Image (cartoon, rainbow, N blue to C red; front, side, top):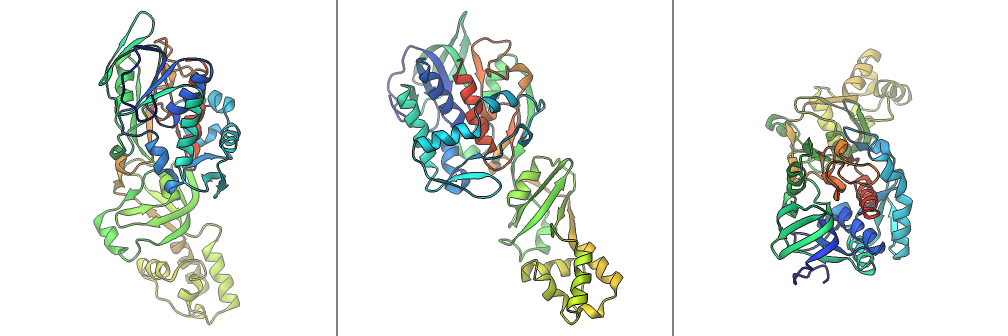
Length: 402
């Protein structure tokens, strides 16, 4: 049985994994290497869909700087054990073992040189070597707890197992088949669900705001985006619906409806002071030409118009006037209309309450033999390969014991 098989399922296996994404496939390979008989089921027509589309098709498969501080959870300590026992260096070694060329982009983000399929092929090769079976186009109809183990009724038949691993992901990008199935299983067995919401997601803006910046979609600039306790210094992109780019996706995890997000539009500069320096160095230069040293001409025109500032030679402004202009241009406070939601969100915040789960094994504390791994848990990483590292680490932790 290979990754696209729909042949007869075995009557029983040691480990049944529901979900053939990053966490599920890592768990399958790890458990199979221990000599356990493993079956992975997925309702989609192919495995690893989220891997294939990630990183612009090149899969940002981990981050050199992965640490517990890069994750959100009601229990920030929960992820520490798994991340410490299967690190970014362990997955990098696996990538190198399979001869996959890769590169660091920015901020420790590692991408495939070629395509995301290289990572899917790596996981499938590891599963084949471990004799783990994978079956797609197989939907789950019911799960029943036995005296020891579980009986799972599927569209292709019934399977009994000792260990049942839920690796079904969250609600993000439903067009790729994302559902709340994993949360339904958790509720069936009495587990608490931390309320979920879209994360790593673009902001939308009100119609009037969009009309004022209708010439900007496609324009990008470096910003520091801040909201609540979060602050990220990366690129921001203007879109036809609002704002995107790494800085916006990152800060969206901290944002709540009605809150303002503050953008420093010239990080690394004190514009008030910088304009005074430029005045001393080139007093005959026009304000818009000086600002074009920092921003594109299109952005300069927009920012000046938004604040009602006329562009004149610097010598025609008073010192206090220049300082005031610099302060006004430096900071932009915006209350987004909302986000684009799960439709484009990269991940789901919230999920299965980690208080119900062993941080060492990923096993449910009150339901022996039931495991939850990956995005379905209330563990969500920053943008930049962290969520994949959580998938590898949690999948490996469960695979070592399931």
